[in-house]
Image (cartoon, rainbow, N blue to C red):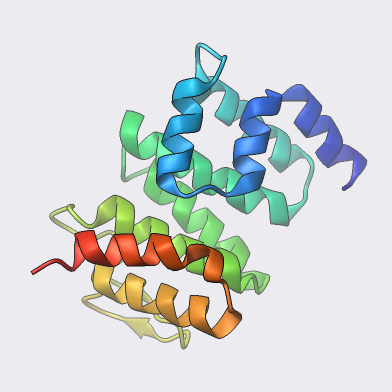
Length: 172
């Protein structure tokens, strides 16, 4: 851990940094935020992401962006600038350059779980797992890509989350 990252952790709430670094599934994230001693988890997460950005390390920034995307989706704009979609897009750019396949799997899950009810899916035009630009993508495509990465990488920590998402999103 770099000294800049350590400084970013000290400047943010320890509780929030633990949430960010654990990359929790959605239900764990929501429970943790509700139990947070902070009166303003949104402010603390903003500070954590800002601190991670100042640390200039990409690995810890991605889970910070994913955490903030969840919070923004439920408390602010889901699309547009400074939104959940913007955080997921930035996380994607970092993970794709990495390559950080486990983060890519997480991002696919986040996209599908957060936006499956939206009238217009924000990633209708996006790259598939082969890196090809595809039109008319749906949350199912993101789930399929997440499943492929989870199985290929042995990322079984996300098996239950994938199964839950498929059960809710793909129900007949």
